Each structure stands twice: as structure tokens, then as C-alpha cells.
Amino acid sequence: MQLARILQSQGFGSRRECRALVETGRVAVDGSPCRDPEREFETESLTLTVDGVDWRARERVCVAMNKPAGYECSRQPRDHPSVYALLPEPLARRGAECVGRLDQDTTGLLLFTDDGALAHRLISPRKRIGKVYRASCRHPVTADMVEALIAGVKLRDDPEPVRALACTRIDDRVLELTLAEGKYHQVKRMLAAAGNRVEALHRLAIGGYALPADLEPGRWRFLEADELARLETSDR
Ligand code: URA
View (cartoon, rainbow, N blue to C red):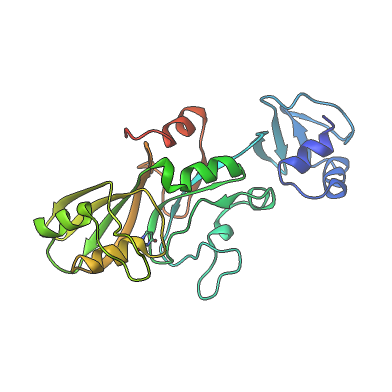
């Protein structure tokens, strides 16, 4: 594929903008500068360097972010900055979208991908891919609460009770909850229905992929093939 077209597919701008990037000497391929936008390359395991930053060419991307509090999962945020502002422009430009949403005050694992089929599988309640949350609660967590969350609680506007795939009391005021769905404010509403209140919420994992311990709040990283495979399993 021609270099300008490769750059375009990776989110570096329109074909015209990508041609200009190459012609002005801002691009190297596998470490060698290239000023010919029409030069052909195999895209498989190609490293592009743009303005001194290395990017491996990828057909599809999936990235994990450790979402900080105070960011909205929207491209048009209302009251807080957008999580998309924490991603480099090429990722946002190639159409990487968040997989489900977290509330502005929720922290932890947030995925972005431009692979629509993957996003659909991860979100679909029928696939039963667990989203694991740690909730700090205002009131003590009782055995009855844990039982109710597993048996199913009734949410307003929802005809059927909603149940957790798993629920574990971690300590007096903290529990871990695994959900198959991602309904609006689901954890907060479930905990309220069970007679408690969420004071802080953090997502620890999606499927078998846990938020990396060394990923600082606000930082992101690409998922590689083995990590992508883990997303669709349930063993962490
Ligand atoms: N449930 C909530 O209540 N909020 C989130 O951000 C995610 C799940």
C-alpha cells in the first residue's frame, strides 16, 4: 500500500495531509526517512515514525485506559473534559470509540476500539462478558445485600430484575460486583435498590483482562493479541 494511504488508515489525517507529512520529511518507515508518499510498503508489522514518535501500523486498534475521575465518556462533553482528550489524535481520528461508558466520577478500565464487531461482542449482554467493579459503599455491606444483588434487584423502568454474575464482600464497606450488562448507572442503581449507596466506583476488569497495575490514571496502552483474547474469557 502507498505510504500516504497507510498513514491515512492509521489516523494521521486526510490523504492530502498525509502526503504533506511525508513530503515535508516528518515520516520515517522502519527507521528510514521517506519523502515519497507513493512508495509502496507491506503494512504487516511496519513501524511508522511521525514527528519522532513510533507507531506500529495496526489494522484495528484496541486500547485500555485507566480512566481518571472527572472525565466524561463523550466526544461532546457537557460539564467535564472528554476522555478522548487523553488519547493521541491519530487514535481519535481513526474512529476508536469507548466500549460502553463510565460515569464521570467512575475510575478504572475503559477500552477504546475501532473494531465495531469486537465492541459489540464486549457490550452485548448475551455474551455475558463480565465487567468487574469495586464499589466503596456508604453503609456496611451485609450478607443480605450480597444475596439480593446475586438473586436480582428491581430497577425503576426495568421490567425484569437485574442480577450480578458475581458479588463478593471485600470488607465492611467495599464489594466487588461482576455485571454482564452496562445499563445506565447500573452499579449505583443496583446498590441503591439493595439499600446501600455507592461512594466511589472503580472498574477492575473486563472479561479476563484486568486493568494493568502499572497503568497510571489518565494513561493508555495498546492491547496485544494475547490480551485481546483474554477479554473474551472469564478467567483473570
Ligand atoms: N455503573 C455505574 O453506576 N456507573 C458506571 O460508571 C459504571 C457502571
